[in-house]
Image (cartoon, rainbow, N blue to C red; front, top):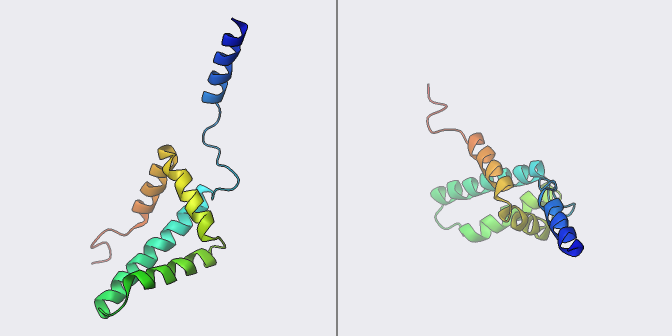
Amino acid sequence: MRLTLLGILLVTFVACSNKKEIPKDVLSTDKMHSVMWDMLRADEWVSYEHTQDSTVDRYKRSVELYQKVLQTNGITASQFKKSFQYYETRPDLLKPLFDSLQRKVPRPGAFVQ
């Protein structure tokens, strides 16, 4: 009986712990936001380049720009991948991250006067 009660208390304690805490080997939400914003901008640049020159290898150019984004932000591809995989398992953190990125994108016609 005591063992069962101890097990229930342990499960309750773990379930109620602070789930917002991000592991040390995972990028913070602010850093992840910055990296993902830069990657979105890189994607837009590649799309623009392709409209200007259809011979541009979009995949190769994207990889080049992603590497520059990671280098600029001082992280490795494996750090980004591990962090992204972590956020994918945490919809409570991923949704606000995506929402903040979406709010940052200018609306069509926002600069038209």
